[in-house]
Structures are given as C-alpha cells and as structure tokens.
Length: 207
Ligand code: ZN
Image (cartoon, rainbow, N blue to C red; front, side, top):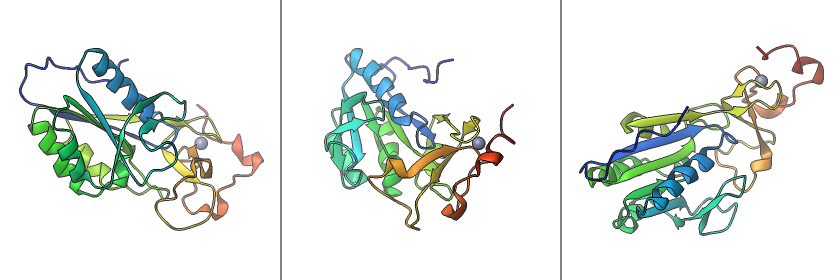
C-alpha cells in the first residue's frame, strides 16, 4: 500500500496540502523525508522548515530517529515560511504541532500559490488531547496520513505518546527518551502510574 497521495503533474495550477500525523516513534519524519527526497529526485525545488524551538538535533537538518536526514531551515514563526518558501515547488514542515494557529493560514496560502505542502506533526499531546494546530491542518488538508507506532507494552498499534517522567508542561524538549509509544489500552495519561506491572502486560492487547 502506498501512503503517498497520487502526485499530480505540476502543470496543474493549484497546489494542495498533505498532513502526516501520529504518535511519537510512528515514523512521521521519515515519511516526510521520503516524500521530499522523491520530489527532489524529480528536480522539484524543495524547502523544509522546522520550529526553532526543536533543538534536539542539529540546527539546520530535519533528522529522524533513524538518522535519515534532509537539510531544513529553523523558523521562529509560521509567517517566516511564507517569505522563505517563495521559490519552492514543494514545502515541508516538520513538528507542525510546535507552530501557532497561523500555520493554518500560511499553508493554505502556499497551496493557493500552487505549491505542494506537506506537514508532519504529533496529533495528540501527552495527555491524549488534540495538539493544535494539527486538527485544523487535517481539516483543511486534501490528504491525511495517520501513522502508528507499536505499543511497547503489548505490541498493538500505538496511537499515544506515553510520557514516562513527571511535569505538566505540554512541551518537554530534548527528551525523546522521556516517551514511549502506547496503544489506547496501555496508555496512562497521568504519568504517576505510567509503569504497567509485568503481570498485566500480557493480559490484553494482542489479537
Ligand atoms: Zn498496548
């Protein structure tokens, strides 16, 4: 099965919006990179942006957990993307959940200008709540791909990012090791009981 929308010939004037969403460790960034590399191979001009807030890795690269990477530009606000993407055919945005709601207007404007826009991001925060502005982006997108990780407790498809350490702040930077993917059954949104006892781990979840 191909996850990627059928890519129309560029002679079509209108652009479109693709959203790649899911939990942490679901391969969102890898999928964004895969689509961008294919476009670049076809000699389309590609530009990738990431929020300057995300300083886990190097400043000017989108780096996924498997180290497959592409050069990207850190930006502080979504409106910077409008200025910097004017020459691009394909615009990628990683970590879309770290932008403000103005990202929705920005990507719509880019699509109206004929560009293919691909946004990857977390669709839920650590409490399992919709993570703005991803829900709004999904609703205006032509194509939405939801990816899943694998629950580390039971092996089912994982839809949630389980936080393993304390703290109520929504954004916990520089700490991918503070999370693990969990399915609905094994997800514990309020971290105190994040650790599931061994004896419970095999009692549910597997088909
Ligand atoms: Zn599970």
